[in-house]
Image (cartoon, rainbow, N blue to C red; front, side, top):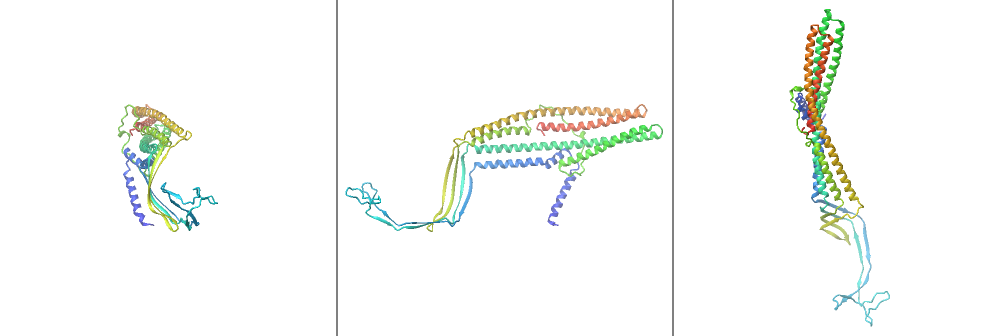
Length: 473
């Protein structure tokens, strides 16, 4: 085993152990914090934000000259050899009238040049050219240099592309905010579901304990001859039902605990405890004018329309004139002529280019129309989704109001069920209540308790859904 990996592994295990131990008691705020730290969707959104920021910087670089270094080397055994034959060349003499040179031809009696059989005039004197060998080699030819290219006018392409990258960066930031909100909603759902199942487990245990006590009393009464065997069987049937509901409540709590651990990025087998139940949290029902303009989705729709505006400009720039300037400085060496190097020096060059689209059979016009159609689609989608968000916000506000009423009603029902159970117990002991009525009172109390727990959980979740729908989460 490689010992150099032992210490880092031990430190990592110790850090994980300390973190898990520190998270045994989980508050809602801590649950959200851990969920955000371990959320894959939030991490992906953060990487997309980084990608958009780098893309924006890359497009910004198009405003500046692009400087490139280049070099090339050619080695070939190709060799061009030619021979220029010897020849007699005509001569010229100064012309005092024109100040230039005139052919040194022999004139006849009429003053015109004497023409030979080949159609050429005879000259008084000829210059002898002895001939020359010509050799051209291409081996060891190389060149190196620097060049700078600066766009002067691109029809707005660079500006449009950069602004699209800026808008993409802003959309990525909004997507990260949306991922954060969705992660918080997921954490709240897991947290309050765990609270709900924990409270329902308490109700199930309390119900079974009451039935245990009732069963013992009925069995004792049967032994004393005060109750029939039928009464014992009735209570045992309820006990069986209570055992099943208790097992279901235990499994539900264990599953919701594992789901909570999954959301927070903790091991499934960790014991998670809560600082308090529903009653320890204050709830403020929202009473305000519905406003969804602060939602990330709303801003993203606006950015999508802005993106389509710049896309139209980008498409239009492909069919506008373009002007560029390229400057270079390099060194060239090679090309031997009769064993003498022709190129062996540095040079500077500047080149300007202009490209003007003339006729493309309507391609540019149709592409621009297509881009405008996409912008119109984006605007319609924005209006449609805005209406949906307005309805969603109003529905979330109604749900919050309904949850408040549901909690009040379930509290009242629970109090009435408890009172009914107590009265039924007194009447049962005094012989004025049947066992079936007494068991029914217990069942009504259990049902009211579970409905109250569910109402409390729905109130908390509906509050979270309202905060997300209003962009305040």
